[in-house]
Length: 490
Image (cartoon, rainbow, N blue to C red; front, side, top):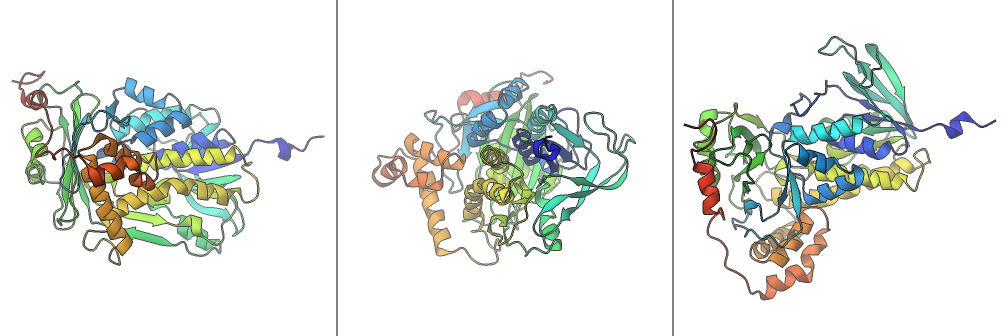
């Protein structure tokens, strides 16, 4: 008679229905039955939710993330586009000033396409797809309290379920009722996707494991965002993204982005480092935009119709936990997403890293059973690999701000920062160099791509086109943003 334990399907618990958690569940569902533990009531569609306050600010999905979603969840990007998202040509459909205050030419020779929409829409499309899988179950209104097991193996997670806003105690997405109170969920694998507030370091030490090494680089960036009705006749058109990046050499650094999204709206996010932060004052928002290194964003929004008040956040530090370097690691436990590393949101890499990490997990499990001894350490290392490139890009810039780190940038970090500045300057005027730069920025290729002939030859020998003296908006684009001929206008 066959041993039922030898033939049963493995089980996994994912803590947090964040994008990283959803991506992890998509990867795991190929190999296990997955249960989500989620504190929130998840919305039915593209609506805000309490557990993701950062969703109100501008988000981008780099082309590396677009490609990864095509592998992990085929059709998700197409579904987002069908519901109002755009695949934007970078830099052809973008007006962007680099941190060294050089404007990029709007080359269309590169293949890179970024997905642009509200975070609420992207979350909704991913969530609907993943939760529709019969191998995935959601336990809402449920909080993870602690890991169950010991220093060699995690066997589950202790949770508390409460009554939700509808009065029901954690009703599951597929109709299963869960009683309020505490219980232990056993699993072959527990995945922590709970984000920046992850308690995994404390959970691991409580099991008798050593403390996890951490590093923080905090440029002191504050964000302020306001939603606008697309001004003039830009609603429903392919108006370009407009991005003015902060210059670390001129503290405080100030920047901003105009992100045209679905439903004829603009998400406008402004940022500033210590001593130059934007505030939640709605009356001061446009004036702050006019005070950036170039006033183009302020000019575009000063007469636009706001759709609500300003929202702010200061949770922007780059923080990394080096789980992959731990001398001991328990079977049955993996950490993913922002719970490993959170980045300054200005670089837009968090979602791309999340889906790339999930792909790495899936590919590892295709060659090694989920229940095999030592697989959790392999999964942890695989999930961490995409983190390094995004971390180096973010820290390479933010470490230059005064007070950002406990120690000043190393000689290597300063050299790399200067080299990246030169690479940006070269890419701003040369399409081959821009392609190499975007390969790295999109997290599709390692940083060594910047030392390829595509970059080094234009950098060393030219010829170079002169840099632009201002934002490359066309006359038609400027006119469309200032025209009064639009529905609802006077």
